[in-house]
Image 1 (tube, rainbow, N blue to C red):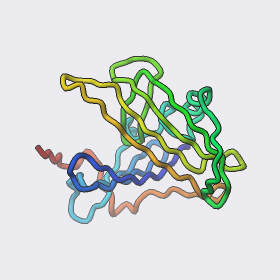
Image 2 (cartoon, rainbow, N blue to C red):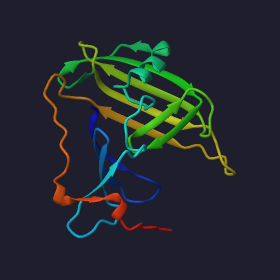
Image 3 (cartoon, rainbow, N blue to C red):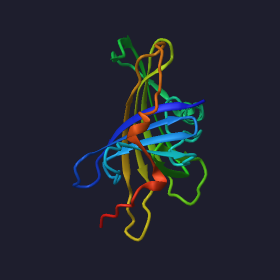
Length: 190
């Protein structure tokens, strides 16, 4: 069973940063987001089998074997004295073009072939510990221009990995703080 606990802060335009948290346990996804109009006393919404929230094999993620296979051929070792999670690391840098890019709550996803979404370029850095486990991953992802305005979006990721070889436990929020997402009122802001 796949489980994960992700905390992010979104910043879009001139809007204040918006904290977001996602807990996935198997097919169940719990989200905490200030943008949701939750009933009094509820802090989390729950969805089952929500494709956009679930981990998949085409996510830009240093723990994803498919993504590592994609970026490895162009990787170059960079001398550095960096330390993360208490250990000395080796850094690898690279850049790759992909046919499609997009986002969902589980993260940024890619496609090697052109599809409905615009492709783009990914410039990345990966720090590995002496045990070859990731300690840090950074990426700048720039979409190809699209739409009438010929806009090109950019997204930056900075992920720190720690606590290797320590037990990890992902726990669902207390039931009394959770509401089913199909019971939420939709909040539209224009």
